[in-house]
Length: 345
Image 1 (cartoon, rainbow, N blue to C red):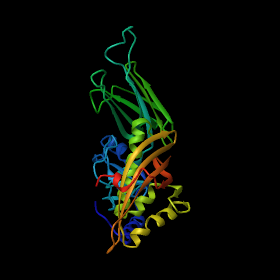
Image 2 (cartoon, rainbow, N blue to C red):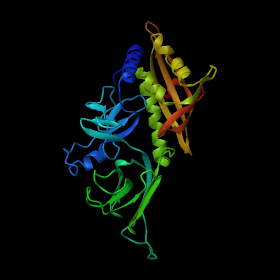
Image 3 (cartoon, helix red, strand yellow):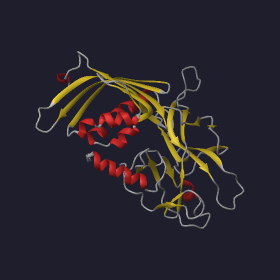
Image 4 (cartoon, one colour):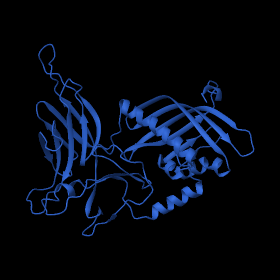
């Protein structure tokens, strides 16, 4: 991992903020690509971009999986639309997607002992309405199914009205088995084909739960560690809620992201190199809150001084906000059962 000094990080953040770039979210050119040939235009390559809160971006596929690392560089060929509002890459129009959360149930090939149908069930499946896809494997018990979601604006000259469309694919990734539609501003769209059923709902306030929610909470702790050690203060700040409070051992509460980041920078600003170790003990999701307890160890090294080691336990409370967990309450203290020797080197 490249590690920047606070000064370089600040310069990069200022430069990025000054660029004319996409607002945070997922952006694709699905509709432009889909109707290009119908409208007599050259068909562009499909593009999917994810932009985070600090305006970094990366390429993604239709399943939301990253195809590149986040970048601070300008998005190649990005420009304001030559006709009308919005954005384009080259001459291909980009549209910002709405996040959706879906559930899918597929009839298994073998019925229950009493002869009644048996179904698979998967929920909290995250996607988006600009060509987003979800794959649900049947694990040899049921057919594999892919859902696709589009907010369709028809080709010029068409009498069809815009619609939110939910497609079900079985064996053909391009041609759907069937589809249903709703108003383009609908918050819910569903389908039932007797052998498969499901629905997708707008997901701005729908955090992941179960194992997916716990895994994301653990991942956020790893992001915190990586951004802190690299001196990436803008990215670290984006992990906190606006009304976050840090309550660290022996220090009065610090409120708000700016106060917290200023406090966290103090060691680096005075020439120290700090390395963190986190060992999560428990992670739970309770509605829109995520709760993590973890053991931590800090190795603090100033030039020409012996390394200092500090260990303790943290209680981290996250709030679901803007499609991700944001650190809301950060509490740590020293604990007699957590010492530097508790951690493997």
